[in-house]
Amino acid sequence: MTRISVVLLLAVMASALYLVHTQYQSRKLYTEFDRALAESRRLETEHQRLQVDKRAQATPLRVERLARDKLQMRTATPAITQYVTADGAPVMAPAAPAAPVVAKARP
Image 1 (cartoon, rainbow, N blue to C red):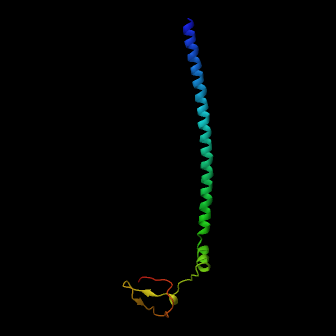
Image 2: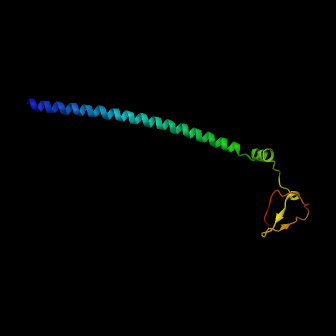
Image 3: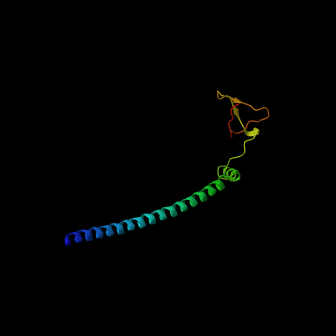
């Protein structure tokens, strides 16, 4: 009888230790999941903020201002446009005087 009691006591102790270990692992995994979820929310917020910044940086007015100020570009008009054919020969526009080439267009 004593031998059975010792075996049962060892089985209960092993079961209790396993239960404690399992609960610890469960809490640890839940904490990691909660951290990952918080990080996911933070990254989503950052992504949305960056999308707003991207849209703000790409407004046509800003792009045009940067092209004019930093790249010294100007709007292409018929007076300063030189047209070329597919073989590369220049074609004079009817009312366009000779001017520097700013943009090339294909007919």
